[in-house]
Length: 162
Image (spheres, rainbow, N blue to C red):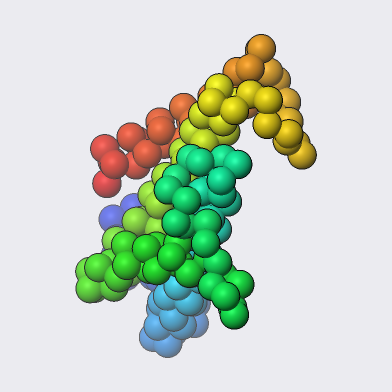
């Protein structure tokens, strides 16, 4: 076993000691399924984000992403674009890099959501909304600004420490 604080995968070391040689393999399989689940959730949520903010009443992204398939009723153009963006990551071959990129993409989705909210506040101030964010100063959503800035800060930190 590696010296304390020196292992590249300390949890796998603990699993190996506690469960034997099979322990780190089982933990690796769990990590693989967990990362796959995160990537799938990101693909679905990102395509739905593209769909939602591309509708004609919002016009944040091109309207083509708001079109739904005639029989499946899914935003197929948004799903295809997100899928195409994701495919190159399959060939990286390192689950740690894929997991890191999934985290980074999730932060980018947070940036897009908060930026879309801010854009809509100023480009479509009279639009009927079902929900209003708390902590507003005039048209400015303090919550969205905080979310945008904190997400950008986390992205910068994440990229600089990677």
